[in-house]
Amino acid sequence: MYVSAEVHHSITKSARFAGLPEEAVRVVSTDAALRMDPAALRTAVEEDRSAGRRPFLVVASAGTIGTGAVDPLDTIGDVAQELGLWFHVDGAYGACFQLTQRGRQVLTGIGRADSITLDPHKGLFLPYGTGCLLARDARALRDAHEVHADYLPAASDDEALPDFSAFSPELTRDFRGLRLWLPLHLHGVGAFARALDEKLALAQLVHTRLSELPSIDVPWPPELSLIAFRPTDGTDADTEDLLRRINASGRVWLSSAPVRGRMYIRMCILSHRSTRDRVEEAVDIIAAAAGG
Image 1 (tube, one colour):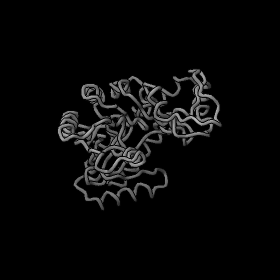
Image 2 (cartoon, one colour):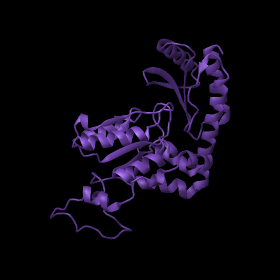
Image 3 (cartoon, helix red, strand yellow):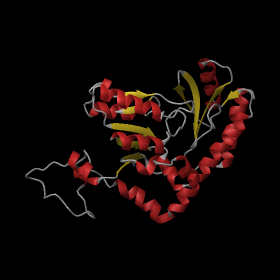
């Protein structure tokens, strides 16, 4: 299976659960924007096939954990189709931005995926634990998970009333779908699309404001709603100190993450309560803490 160095750790953890040895997970290089390089993917697959290995899966990211980068999904889809790979998109953070016009432009090609993960508890502001796997081919899921036993009812062939235990590892499960259906039913999809579009606009606002500060380095324009920054010409210790001063305000809480061996502060705008006045206050706090 093929991933980039920016992939979420849950992907490699899932590979371990599936019984794949560590060397079966191939890390594909990224470009300057920290997106998977499709040419490097093609080369890696061809080299592995020539060596007698069996490439089967490529995982692209629709919003990485470090910088919110979106891999070139359409081009990776081309490579996957040509080379016969299952094309999975990790859209846990970013896939819901497909509801917006700006998000659809960034996520071009996501509809070509064989499977997509998304977390409505992120992108749709819902209670924690509301996750989803979408698969193009339901039969593939069923073939992988369905197991019969004499004491179980006969398998359901009713597409409107499936036996969900035949499509996932779980047997007994709660009604997670209600958490998603009810808010959409009450408020309409438009309310969620407008809220997501607001987050994209706020991320652009933050990037513009921080880029104006000589004391702050903001190397990557946000593709979605995550902005990564650090002190200009600062060390990792300087970055951690800046983060400490920002969070000491008690008005905002940001996190940090290493990106290509250097520590960056992350500002991820993904709450329906993160409005313009709150975000502008956060930028003012960052500017004051950075002395900018």
